[in-house]
Image (cartoon, rainbow, N blue to C red; front, top):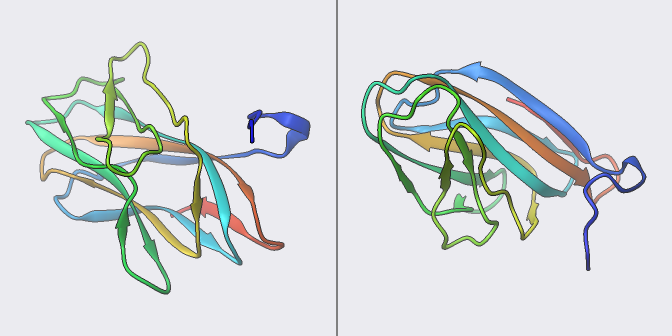
Length: 146
């Protein structure tokens, strides 16, 4: 199936405001309710320079079932403001860190069930914002910033 991102206005964008997500623990960045969604793009942007080396990864924490990483942890040095994070959509592949100029995005959309999408970064100073492009698979499904 070839997915066209903005075909007939089916895709929706949700922005999560900048916050300190580099706590060393999983931080909820988006919440899914009412059914499954198809996630096309999930990206982050460093908004305050990181105060040290860190790794980062995205995970799904479903209401029913076990938390699952949707990318492996990717290394990042002291990322400057504007550094972009992305992922391929292949679960075993590390989170991608792009420069301030660009970053790869998902080639493989991911089905996500009711629960939370989380980001886990190292325990350093800094902050990031996030954006998700998605569409509902089930009637009544929603995805909102956490």
